[in-house]
Length: 212
Image (tube, one colour):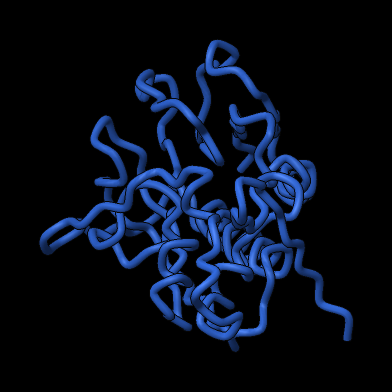
């Protein structure tokens, strides 16, 4: 069955931009008509809309039969912003990646599938993103393979929420060791949001790179 599928990435500075063409190619190779866009106004009627790294809540949900979102938490726990980052800072090593239906309420839709990321604690941001993307792609392709007989389950339990991160969340504490702050280094982006500290009225950034 050929499906009309749209991928929307409206955050043009998102790391997901680097992977979105690969996702489009993977979907197209399944025989579907797939389109990649970056503006909500470009969304048209179709079968499936895939919302990835979107800054704004998409409200025209009636245009497509399914509206899919991927979220890195065991919903309803961990709704909100940057769930993978927050959980790594909490010291978690198993993080669910969840495929769900987009709704007008943030991260509250029915769940279609889940893959657990199992981390060894050494992964830096680029490795984490690759793992996150691969799980995202596998969930979406599995959903399309099962279309239109996709099974879903409603979320149950008390929701919790993560807030949006800002530059101060990447600030290092000079009184703490590298060991104590290693997870903060792991989720730092050397270009977009590097780890930094302040001393004697000056600000400095520290970059991290795996060399072995």
